[in-house]
Length: 112
Figure 1 (spheres, rainbow, N blue to C red):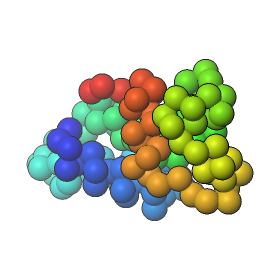
Figure 2 (tube, helix red, strand yellow):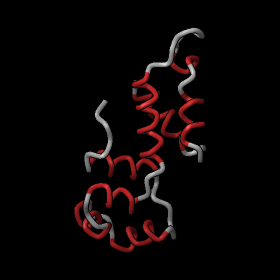
Figure 3 (spheres, helix red, strand yellow):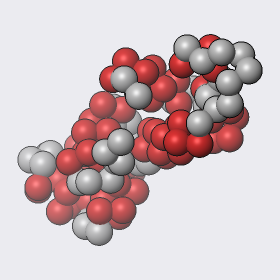
Figure 4 (cartoon, rainbow, N blue to C red):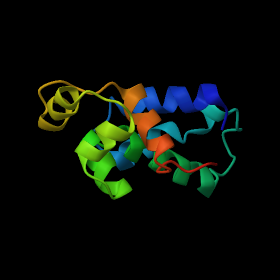
């Protein structure tokens, strides 16, 4: 998957509340340059699932998946405590790029 395809898929995932609908719609051959009769590769389906999960993971969920508290994550990444609290309580929404960067830094995103 190219960086552009990843970016498109991550941005599009925000528009879906149904994981399976997202995967089936974005796995369509036209987006990937496949022929209409080509079989959809299983690794593409898995990658799309990982992207959907990452996009929909909250900051609180990211910390939990990494095995640390939100406070520890704030300290580790120099995020102001009030900002972290607001993200965790839903007062403010953490930007997608920040959530993806946090997950990447915490080793929660697949490398391939």
